Length: 193
Image (cartoon, rainbow, N blue to C red; front, side, top):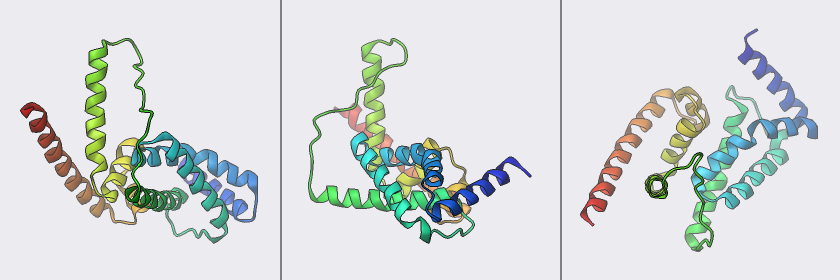
């Protein structure tokens, strides 16, 4: 039996135990997926505290409804990402109704010493790119996070997003074109100042 098949079989057994009420089994699922779900939510919200809260809500919801989970041939993680996606969509909708101004900004700590100006320029570029990504439609943001942060293949992304591999490739291509145009517009804006 291949390593992947054994892992999938083990996960099915753990899911069965969790559905029967085993807190230990659900704890194993939590430990397996919490970092991935947190990263996904963090990149969609840009706020550590909100990402922590929403991640906790994903797993609370999953724990409450695990008895209703049905294996449909896609990974369990796809179900968790769907819950996370829905909670993030609600978070964005609620946030658009009431604007909040955060007091703290993220600190960039370089791994090794680098000139402060270099750090500032890199940080500004990263922030600008994240701002552009956050203007994309939610499905395109989700695609970029799953592809570049989580490292999923197009097939795996298709399972999570409930799309064919071809549809994922097409969305990926359109997303990269849109990003290239927006980054180009940003360069023109910066150079024009």
